[in-house]
Length: 237
Image 1 (cartoon, helix red, strand yellow):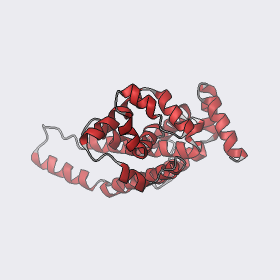
Image 2 (cartoon, rainbow, N blue to C red):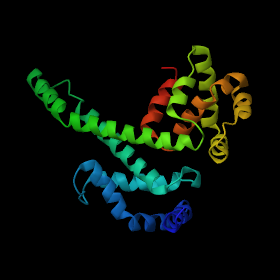
Image 3 (cartoon, one colour):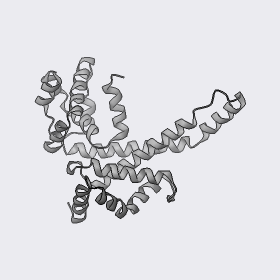
Image 4 (cartoon, rainbow, N blue to C red):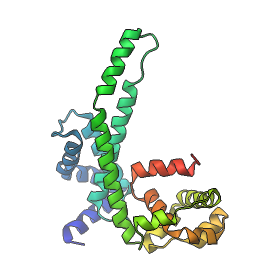
């Protein structure tokens, strides 16, 4: 780790529970925050843009949620900012789609046409790009655990019973952050603790260890888009 990266991490650690230092860090990295916002807006942000405020808050969230186990802070923060901006865009788009029941049919038809033309392609392109970035980041991180994307595909549960066992283990890990911290620190899936805590068969977890590496990483490191899909799986949908 170079000296600049080490210095940033030390500043972030110091600011995690110190609001004054957090404010100073946000001020120092405003050029970075504005740069990440401009990538989303496709233009330099104005001070009045809601997106800039959202990006600043996302940076603050990144400071609060960061740990040394998560690698480069700026990469982590950039991902947090982009995901929060996409979430906000989706919410705004959804709100635009709420048509009053008192509107006339002509008004509704006109509004629907406006909504359908309103940056649909832009939104989808942004989401696809963000997803690609998450997959690339996850793939790089998985190599540190000796696992590849093809390993995960081959190792995914094929039967409902084994999928449910993995679901229970992951839910237990999410409810016990110390398990996830140990996983990141040792780069090993704590199979015994997962099996005991979730009350499932350890052999089943062992057979799907590489799959669990990917899912646990998604649950720990800011992969907001993929985490949404994983949560649906964990809920059995």
